[in-house]
Amino acid sequence: MSPIVQLYWIRVSLGVVAAVISAFLALYLPLHDLSSLIDSFTVALLIYLASYYPLKAIYSKKIEKQSKVLSTAVLAYFFAWLPFFVLFFTIFKIYG
Image (cartoon, rainbow, N blue to C red):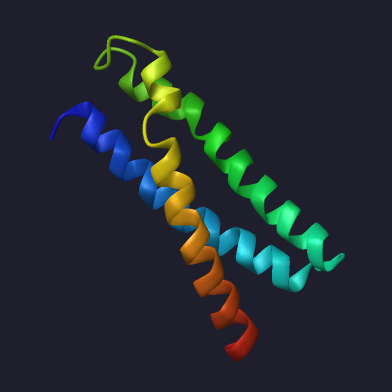
């Protein structure tokens, strides 16, 4: 697999992990209805930005343009985060 494809799948996987974390926080640390959603999105955004530095260190010699490390799979990350956030929030709400 090329480094860009690896980075893509790492970001999609991180989106699922971020969905679990943000759904847990939204359910068990509720402030208000809209505030919980904004906080969940903020957690997902912070996880995405925090993953930049380790991934930059890993792929700095493999990818020519360093801006590609930040921008690769940003939409895939959030499109993976959103449905899994809803799924895990529902699961935690019903069974938690």
